[in-house]
Image (tube, rainbow, N blue to C red; front, top):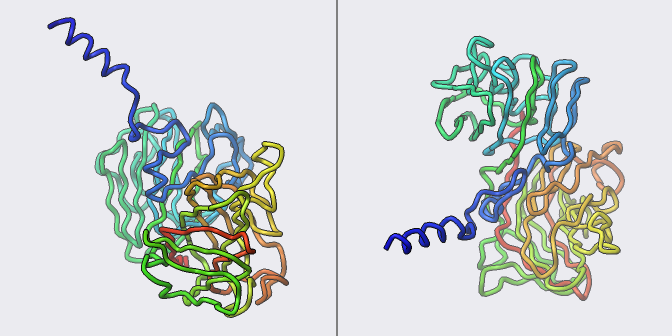
Amino acid sequence: MRRALALLFLGILLAPLGPRAQAEDNTLTPEELNQGWILLFDGETLFGWETATEANWHVQDGAITVSEGERGLLNTTSQFGDYELKLQFRSPVSTNSGIFLRTPTVPQNPAEDCYELNIAGDGVSPFSTGSFVNRQKAAAGLHTGEWQSYHVRAKGGNLTVRLDGKTVLEYSDPHPIGRGHIGLQLNSGPVSFKNIKLRPLGLENLLNGQDLTGWRPYPERQSEFSVTSEGYLQVKNGPGQLETEAKFGDFVLQAEIFTNGEHLNSGIFFRSIPGEFWNGYESQIQNGYRDGDRTQPMDCGTGGFYRRQNARRVVADDFTWFHKTLVVTGKHMAAWVNGYQVSDWTDPREPDENPRRGSRTAAGTLIIQGHDPTTDLRFRNMRAAEMAPR
């Protein structure tokens, strides 16, 4: 009996972890991908971030780290509105740092132009870890000096902060800030951050799984758009396009895409001029790459901005569902594929209503492209939301 129990216990210890096992640092689990999470830090580079001051921000041992320099922020290049944010941080108890939410790149007053989620041991600041500086103190923040976790939910003016799994702050802003960057702070003392993940909130379905309600087809073109028995949007043949009736200016979009062929070419156009053919910015769909090197995309690469910026890496594969996220505000645009940021571009051109000639910031339609006779793609769980102004 004892031998049997010992073998059972050993078997439990050696059993492979199931699909709900925790991901490695700076990666997403399949469950997180399906829920819409993206990585803001790839674990290796500062791609998608920019410094506002001179400080020694760098990546060390899979974490964003800073210890000295001019006080200020390392900001995401993208802005975000409503979201959940998860991250881990570590600093000595003597450090005073923070995470800035919906912030300008250089905030002036945390009580007005951002939400400063503090990192500070007792006695270092009147606003200890878990507090919003100059807004509200945490109920029971505890700074340990080891790796700790934040989980923030920001929806409109309601913000909730969990520290190491425990809710320590619930804050309601009568004059909410609509959107802004996420900033990591150097104030005094060293600090490190990792596993920085974000999930956009408030996105609404663009596909109803039954018909093309909300979309304008162009039957005079060659592409064929239909809804499959599983509720997927299917695109075949081309050239052609399917265009939303709704317009989007500054927005977040997420979709799952399946390319049923090798190196098929398609795209999602945005801020398009309504009724015009393929006239907008194009977020490319093309999973081919050269010489076995995923950093050498064919024809811009999935998530790149066609004729503007190639994807830095081809993440997705043909014949497999993949996730795509677009975040667009003002002249800036960025894309994630399977949660990994592949592009980060700001249009340097002079303003123009026509995006072929210059920088278009006016709202426009979304277009799904049928590229050519080989086109054979499916879309599902396509969702989008316009961002609130600051």
